[in-house]
Length: 145
Image (cartoon, rainbow, N blue to C red):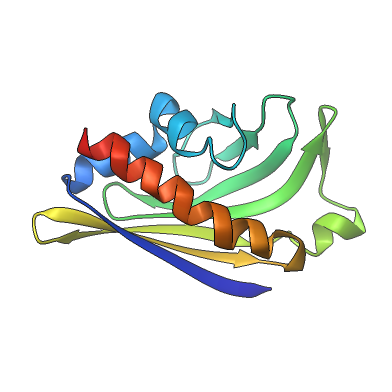
């Protein structure tokens, strides 16, 4: 697994950025560059399982390892979801299971710096390098409206 990092400065209070990023409506909007219709089922409380899904129901099952409101969120990806079935055993998921996606929220100059640290593999590297900056730009736009 390779580690990638993305950062963006948003001219909005950290509380607004955190809330927008994790609440249903904001999440659907800022993650649209990945897949239009992206959403989650579950909640962001520490220790809970959460499903990240596209409009066709495929996606990932993950666990919120840590959630310090307005400071830090750590997501552990555990498996893929396809046709309503959760896969945590196939060779494909074994290459990706255990990957983390971490969000750090820093107060900087009256605004917020969002730092995304994530583990990726060859299959997902290009997507995360190209699309993540676009998604974060959408988050910035939403929060600064």
